[in-house]
Amino acid sequence: MKIFHCSRCEQLVYFENSLCVSCGASLAFLPDRFDMGALELTQDQGWAEPKSGAAYKLCGNYTNHAVCNWAMPAAEDDPFCVSCRLNRVIPDLSLPGNRDAWAKVELAKRRTIYSLLALGLPVLPKTQDPNGGLAFEFLADDPVSGRPVMTGHDEGVIVLNVIEADDSEREKRRNQLNEPYRTLLGHFRHEVGHYFWDRLVQGRPALMEFRRLFGDETISYQDAMRRYYAQGAPLNWRDRFISAYATMHPWEDWAECWAHYLHMTDTLETASACGLSLTPQRKDEPSLATSKARRSFDELVADWFPLTHVLNNLNRGLGLPDGYPFVLPPTAVEKLRFIHELIGAARESTATPDATAAAKA
Image 1 (cartoon, rainbow, N blue to C red):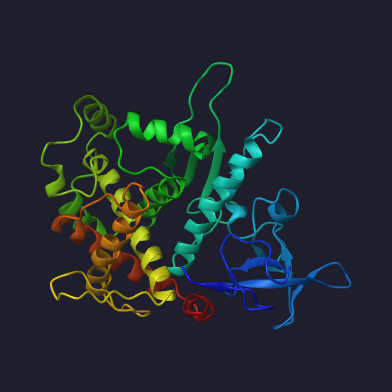
Image 2: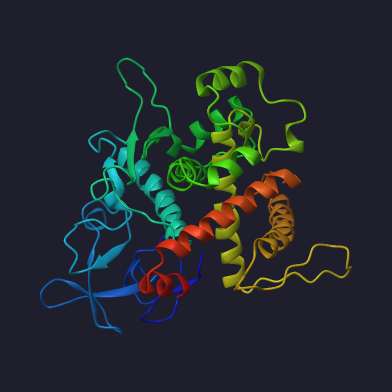
């Protein structure tokens, strides 16, 4: 993502910050400007961004629970920001630990929503679009019956088990399922992939190409799931898939590829914003030129491989697991190309001058 600075003192700040450690200004992400703003209280107890004079109000989850750091124009009627207004169920805050878990969940969700907005994809709540909108429900296992909550997507509703915010529990599940990677951010990116399959592929001209690349999605999902958990992935899955889980069903293959596409675009944008470039001594080693305007999918992929090479080696130097423990076979790259082109077409069909300006800011 972009690199942000305090608009009062120009101190480098993170996307997650709500306070500038240099000048003490209250910070908020401003989706209408796609930037962090240093906000000041006005005489009428509102908020304003001094440089522009624009009036804002903090998200209700910022002021009431400190689990959000977004704001919106003061004229908007909704008390919640464009990310929090997608929530349909939040954790029971009367239970110990749930507020901290919710804060971690919201942080990962906001980064996901940022990526979707940056790509020019529509992000509408179900309260505004009951049939095509998006909603989130953050639930916990039933403490009495022990009935578990399954993270997943169904007709625009994404359910996430808040136990995933517990690092030790999530790592235990990752090991039990023999997964190389399991994060809150990964969950969100995967599940919104299912949502956008409904928006961009189902019943649309792209469905034929989807079936050529990913397979026939009409095969029984329940049968495919039982088979996968009983038998695992085929031995040669690395020749055609981005992950073992992607082999379960064409829908999961799509969602895994969608999540990876968001991994790529977000990380590459950050690298570009930092001015990162790689100039090895030998011509046959990975190189990366700073590129803030990748115009094609081929440029994106060409930059991705050297960046992951450096990322994994930096992690190994710190004694950590690979940050990107995946290998992309050619067939997976073609699936990613398909997603790239679909997103580009969707962006062109829904773009407005304001949205285009915000995305380029």
